[in-house]
Image (cartoon, rainbow over all chains, first blue to last red; front, top):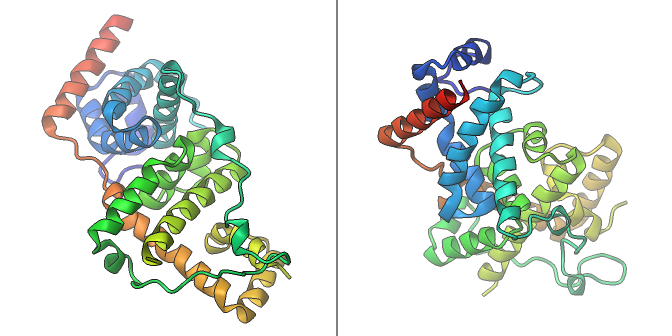
Length: 203
Length: 82
């Protein structure tokens, strides 16, 4: 879905192609924060802004060839994702999809009986609303740390879905993964955060 | 009927309404009988809502000066292309 403060893609794209400065400013105001958020998920905070700026130049360069198979927003975010992934590869850090789609089980097998039912079921949490959970500074840190240790593509999936509210269809286009892999990335990320909260709440 | 392990493996799909009806039926039957999986799912839902409200979920702010600086870079890049 396009940003509410922006004209439709049909109006905006020709203006961007005509190098209209006002349209540049509108589109940057609407999407740059989101682009930095996504870049931060993939490459980390230190170079996220640089990656997002680099992506704008790539957007302008590629715009004449934009085939409109997705919204402008999804297409721009795909360029950010690709720019960020190239940057990681460049720095010889892994951006392995295999790592993000690791086969490890969602639940520690030690918590299950041989018949795959709970041996050590989840304990009650002290809080039952997000606000009550986030009232604890220690738990906020714990969630932040758990997010920081996720593989990049899992972090990107959870950022786009649960923080930015994008559709799974758009997320799979942005991250260039199949729908089933996109769902695995998201579920693994959520489960890791859930386990981090559980460890904290179980103390 | 799915096991508790099956429930945990596909719980995001269940919450996001992405399971085929026959798998969904299996979930309902299991959840009707398993208090532990009901708690697991409630906690996953709470986790998702908490992620969305956590400080990390805030979209980074962009100041008017930053917007202007990026627009300048964009203008320069199009000039180079010409």
